Length: 242
Length: 329
Image 1 (cartoon, rainbow over the protein chains, first blue to last red):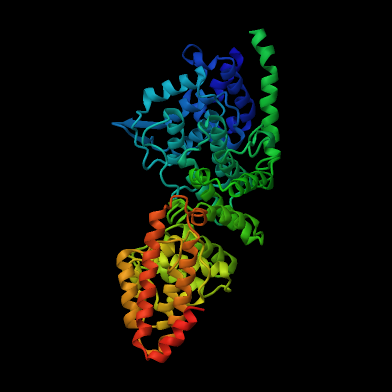
Image 2 (tube, rainbow over the protein chains, first blue to last red):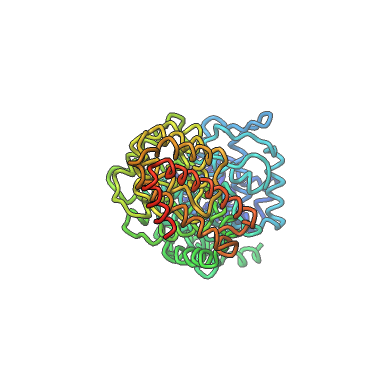
């Protein structure tokens, strides 16, 4: 363990090495989070924010489907943001990192039971930094962080109201749609899907050219969920199940 | 620590496996849209079959969200989804005149403006009575777009019904009425069949709507308007009723109008006969109607009949006798 720690320290300033070794690093981080070592980061100090940031920037978010490291993504996301009197801004040069971290966090949250201790812990940490009435206007990760805020806080005015400004590459679109579909299937209450999610569906399906097939699948599964269809026997779509 | 390491070997392997397979199967999925579509279709079919108005109304946002996908299906020559969507929307009789969620509105002008695909214009026209899309512009250009689109697609009774229903709704909107191109009113002369629950027809019995139709100064259009708006399913607006009587006296006066009187009288007689069928018949599509509503409607259509008969009595006695004889069968 110490050897890994030392090696991480060594390569934390070297982008090329991180790029080369991104898979073992990712596996290590996921494992460390799973066994709880990462939560003791103050003691071990393994994870410099530099490493965390580079890891997230280098890693394609579509591959990060395991819910375990939500705490890592939350820490990374918060490290990219400034909060001043309720207004949230990105640290200069952190736009890309915040975008990736927010997508990863959204995806990770979609896999966590909202009644679990882990979820409550993340919410507590999030609310310690981001106020309930935070203003996310102008952020590059506006849609993802608004969705995170709604997922964690479950109230307040921060839901993404209009999706007309939502633009993403196909991979991000797939990732985002899948996170929302996953969240909806896990958390919907009274058979209702939140309106802001259905607005995302309308926006996505109205795109020309047509969105990627996984986005269509997730949008249809959101509609099916709201209509009360039982989609459990259909299996998985998009990123689910990986 | 060894215990930790051992216990999480499997997890690490799982993660690495998922990372590797993610590279290979990126964007692929084991589920096909058709499977989900089949589930959704089954659910909607059940709602339509059961005429479950409350549930359809409560799910209007999800149903609306399906429309863009139905459009994509239509683009690919698959009409089933749009047909099912329309049947569901039309079953939702209680929604006043905007069943579809307002967030769909930006898509409708895009479809109306589609240059290369008439089926998309048709899709937009068929859903046009179910949202107030024309409200998205204040200069009437969307109404012009609609007028251009309806002239570009082949006529069917279904299209005619949607166009006339929409036209009457736009006409009942104070801020939009003046943007209707004069030529569009000729759609009334096709006299498509309107459904029992038709909010366009109901709203069109207001005085302002008839006034704009009369301003065209075309007897055939005025007559078509009256034939479309007079229905056992709707009560007339009281000011609209007065305007209708005025129109009969002023627009339809003169012996040369006798054939129009005949058509209008026949139509009114049919409406009154339907009202005579009573509550059980009318409650099929209007569960809230009561006996006093029926009597009020009978009074209204009786007033219009009298106004027409009055025109007959002004004409030479011989002609009046012929008409009355025909009227008595």
